[in-house]
Length: 254
Image: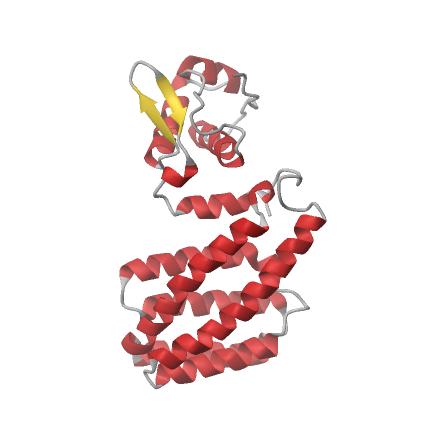
């Protein structure tokens, strides 16, 4: 198979090789089971030395995107075989991969994790975290009508809830969702968003956390997620119909 590669110039060569190959794997241009060109051919096509190619392939192997088979070559692995959560973020960087189905799967995963996060936060939070949450709520009341400021405040809410769980694993997952919310911001944080509803729901959630009531906190967040998920999916459907995302979209970032 002939793979169209773009010669690289300047910068960190190994990083650029890695990003170009990773993009082709995630886009499906390099499908599962396909063999990469050998190290020498890749280096020649990209205009880099073989050490840069070797380092890039090692990173792909670490992320379980490729398998190096001694004596046979390097083969693309199925995406579903990887255990790297970072792939979620990378998938969303390519507009061609962002489809309504992918978003439904992502939002369902986020729902399951964040509902548990808020339960833990309600039981494990401390007074300092409560004080920060109250300050965030006050800021939202003053600045929430501005989409960019509302997004920044929501990102802080996400980080704070993850921290308040007292569980490093949930905190790391919350950090991932914080990055995804930042990336998906244009799909939801705009003038059409009902920021007052968000502010009122945050106030309800804070009251439940203050009362150490995990069941009520979960119920409040469940309503919030149902509302935001529906809004995000509506934007995704609209952008798909317009050809801005999905297989028919041009390359680049969302």
